[in-house]
Image (cartoon, rainbow, N blue to C red; front, side):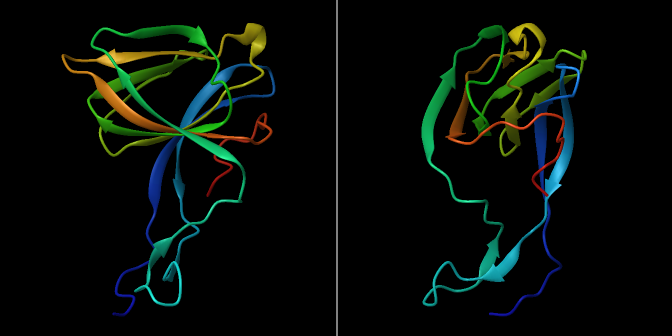
Length: 147
């Protein structure tokens, strides 16, 4: 099999803290993909490898009507929505709704007053997600640091 398409891009929302301690969110794209197998015996595929670090995976089910009032992400974490929908509202007033297949990097630590963001389910079904918390130092004012 040969590489037949241009290097892919994968969109994600980055919830981050700006230099003034305000949480914000913007949409960026992962794009450092390389076309190769995960080992020599596997057919090539597109991979964008992140820096190695310790991580923990949590499968989460947010019930219908769930709202997490203002809080910071406990650590930088990738959140992938599997089913249902949810919203994330940042301190700047920006509210984004996400659904299945969407990806978010939650990195709003060190916000002014620890406010961070609020989030909750949207619609009449639970929102299921996989959350991968990274044991890394959170950044400040580095929107879209994964490209």
